[in-house]
Length: 194
Image 1 (cartoon, one colour):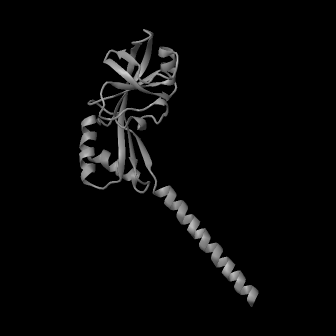
Image 2 (spheres, rainbow, N blue to C red; image 1 turned 180 degrees about the vertical axis):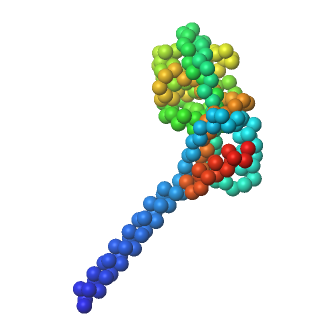
Image 3 (cartoon, rainbow, N blue to C red; image 1 turned 60 degrees about the horizontal axis):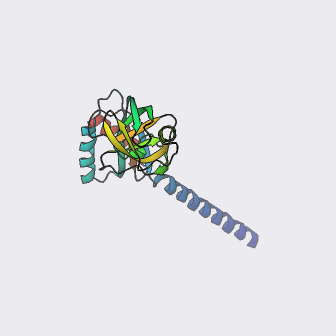
């Protein structure tokens, strides 16, 4: 009888610890920042739509931490002001949190602030070809859209320049929520409502 009680208690403790572990894992997976990416080509989504969403989100608790919308532009000539080297790079125009656009790792510098103007983030390959190094933060480049200061260098394949945009169409969308629960449905509703 004593052995049977010990087995029952051991079994109960094992079940209880398993339940606690499962609950902790569920909480960890469900209640941590979660990003939803959407391909919005063909939806006629624009920066103005995103501004409206931001205004609505401020008044409601939808759990949105930050968002970004971007489009891939054409290739442009990019010229280093200091070295005079010239390369051709694809320009990615981003509205919102640049670090969400394409989710590339930052190698040097920073992504820049959403409210800043006149800055860009360039790929490692473009930095090496223009400046001979990835330590290019603070350097300046000139494109057909004007002169921009390099805020950071990202690990991204190819010659890429990412720059903030204040208007125009959006092809891709990323929204970061404070939890995974209902995140995809919230983005789908936003896209259906606009």
